[in-house]
Length: 634
Image (cartoon, rainbow, N blue to C red; front, side, top):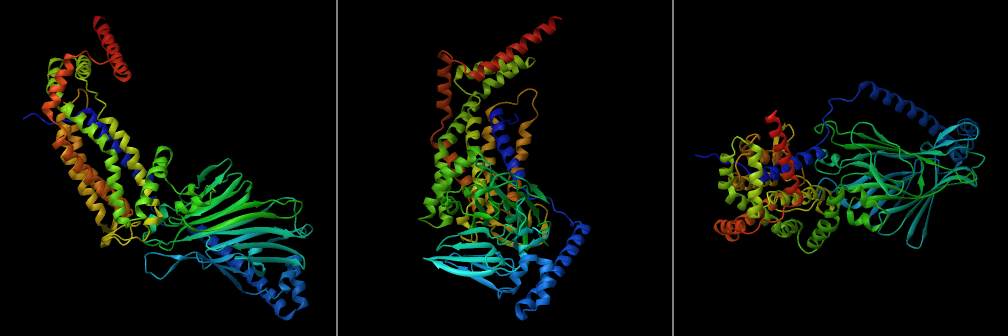
């Protein structure tokens, strides 16, 4: 019995799809696990932290003593250490205290010591899962700090985070304004001003100084240090870590991010905003006047997901604050809120660029097709049903392309006996066989590339879906069937052990998607193999593709297991619909006898003018044939 073989175009189509899946897996794969961090570096950090803590306690004890007793000896001692800023120790605010401002969306707690935000709570979102009772806190328990390194005119280096600010809370209309002043005298101070509006995630944040021309060394900019260790907020720490990155806008609307890994750094110039982006929540610092050269660092903290389960990344930003006429005056804003495309887009500050929707055509598909369409559907129906309807509409829109692909396969299948005959006739002359095959295609009006082009058109939509669903904030903690969170994996069985590259759980939607992929490839492989004979000089692709029928579903099973259930659901429904469309097209639209009759009729007509690609290919083959003939003469 004659062995079934693939036509070249089908092989190219499957190879492209397989290649793009490998590319997607490579782009999204987690970093290799690191067994242990460097012990010497950890010990050094611990020693430095203890030394700094001891120094801070000493200054704090003296500050409290001055504030409570007015001890002039202690004040004199502080003046030796703090210079003019010892004045701040004489104020009632020179003690551990906090001020809270909040609206319906966020709650911020600002400490007297350091004057920066020590707690930032998002009041409408829960961590891990719906009903957990734990609100998302982007800042808490000293995971963040803000510090201005003060270089004084008498050659001292002070850190604002170690000093006490005086709080003053006022209201202007519905806006809450909190002024935190680090004082060097009654009218000499460094001020942090926080402005919180109703129903807004964006907080105004200004840094300015007054009367410090003689107190500070204004010859060079001060260094603003902003650090944040990002808390885990989602069910899968490795999945959340994958999408936790430090983004920034710089120059003329240029965007970039600090690479993912251990101690990665970028030093951009003219920075407009710095985004400490987590998977679904972000902390973003924006400035009206671009920062000069800034140092941005990112350190991966999830080295072993079985152990590192609390934090995902350590972000650090060192920003220069330039003086204007001897004083600081920087107007900025701080965003504490969801990494949601619609929310960020409304601010019209390019903040939506931190959401990875893909570059080029992939981003366009997401921005102009996927996001508007899914947003419309999900506003009327439940999210799980919206994904199904969304998938159906996309597949229906793609059905003409699918039809052309199957029609091309059917034509190639009809031509197969004649192509086989040419293969036998020119068995000893592969070049002549290729030339005659191209002539046959031209006479029959068949384009051998027609089966490949539809696959190429569909690939951008497939890749765009891999960017869209992991970034869809609206899927977070939305349930469907057995999945309690469409933005995370739909675990049905917890395994007592870890499987490399798979995890310690079984998700059902990836299993269903893999089964659907298997049956789709199984159903289409027969026709594709019958479309054209094995090409001379090529490996036995038929055997290779038979292996792919089993390898591809397994590969997808591993790939989707730790991904969000929404993406797995989309791929499951997508493959089911493709199978259905394929059955309908084959049963009701493709008639092999009619196609054969049409091809025979086309042969009697004058051959169509060759396309540029076919013409060029034939010229190349003719040149090769001529060279071969010359070599034989020699």
